[in-house]
Every structure is written in C-alpha cells, then in structure tokens.
Length: 156
Image (cartoon, rainbow, N blue to C red; front, side, top):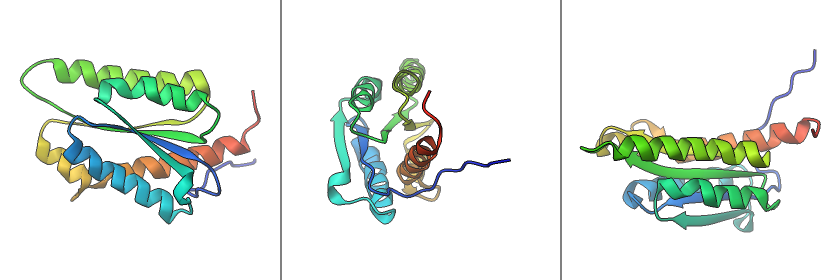
C-alpha cells in the first residue's frame, strides 16, 4: 500500500487569499494569521496575493477567478459571518460555503473555507487569534497541505 500525504510547506508555490471587508476587525486577524503561516512555512513575499471583497457572499466569485487563473496552488477564503437577529446569517453562510466548494470542484484547485460562522462577536474573536487559535493560520496550513497532496496525485 502506498500512502499519500501532503506537507504543510509552501515549497515555492504561489497562494492567494481572498478576504471579506465585512467584520474586518476580525477578518484582518485571520488574514494576519494566514500570512504568518505561509511565511513560517517558506513562502516568499511575492508568493502570496491578497484580494479584498465586500463581504463573505462575494468570496466565491473572486476565489473561482483566482483558482481558474492557473497562477495559484491553492486559494484561501477568509471571512466572519456572525449571527444576528434576522435569517441573513443563514443565507450568507450557506451561499459562501456552497460557492467556495463549487469553486474548488469547478477548477480542481484547493479553495479553502476559512470563514468563521459564529453566534457572537466574542466567538469570532476567540477564533481569530484568541483562545481558540487563529483559523486563518489553520486555513493556510490546509491550503499548503492540499496543494502538496494534489501535486502527488495523477492528473485526471
């Protein structure tokens, strides 16, 4: 049996990060965590591009465009959707998740879901560098691992 496993290394690959400006006080911390992870794993300053979109609903379109460009080994989507008093949360969170998944499926490029979906602002802060770590860092690590794994797989 041959076991295939990706590594969490940038190894000269290029990555893109797409970030939502909505809830930017939280998302900026996710972005910082992701960029720190890429650098810690060997990415150079020119190996990561960052694109800002208005909100999490807009993440999939830009992610798909970047993924289909052929320039990037993986794309990381970062945002924070915090539950409010209306069903808006459910629609945005679901459409962002579905669109990000479709972007990966349609392009064959890893498009990582790094969108926080929390009930409270405090929960979001806890996941953006607080007591639950930084999910931006985690998303970047997943992007590197998936890019490495896909590089080992046969094309098809």
